[in-house]
Image (cartoon, rainbow, N blue to C red; front, side):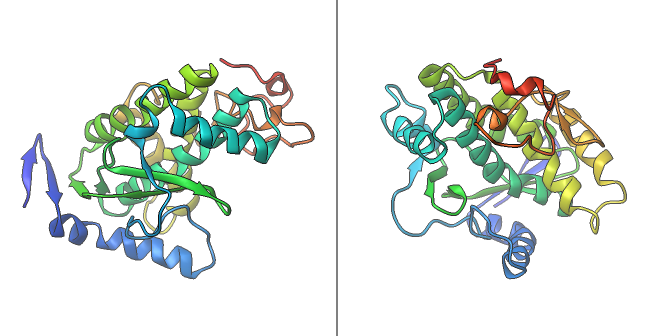
Length: 251
């Protein structure tokens, strides 16, 4: 059943599945082409080991600490760097279906802390899924994406990671901004006349805390994801300041 909210229609249950079917087909085509995703095309969960974002973000953060510790071992990194790199994966996989759905047909899954599931993955570091799926559609989705994805899902986990490791919040929000822009710029050429302009428009429509954290069309971050803080690692293509980032700052 659909309900109207400031020009945006929100669907749940079977209606949400139908609304997101084109997105699922798009993601399935990516998998069939050989791209490895940290989520299933229909956002469904299978197997065990899942935790909701709400559970991970609840003090004393025991389940979150396990995931960060796994990241420390994977990259031989200090806690704040491991947290930032783990978060980069979470931010990307939770944001990808929203960004692609927005570019595809302005229909996006509504992911929140209570409905989003996370678990460790050998292939993609983090795997995400959703339960009680809802979808929103409309021309102006920036406010809804900001309320659900950013403030409802990302903010609690960012605050938890900061409390656990003292990793800087602004850098974590930079990973969210990149996750919103990158799928559109990288994979939206058959959907949009100007993917870079579309990505910039999406960030502007969402506003704080992601607007202004990406230089588009250059796809250059204004914050560091801390990958270059790892010994022997080259800077990411979107690295903010190639040499200066090696300081591994927490800001």
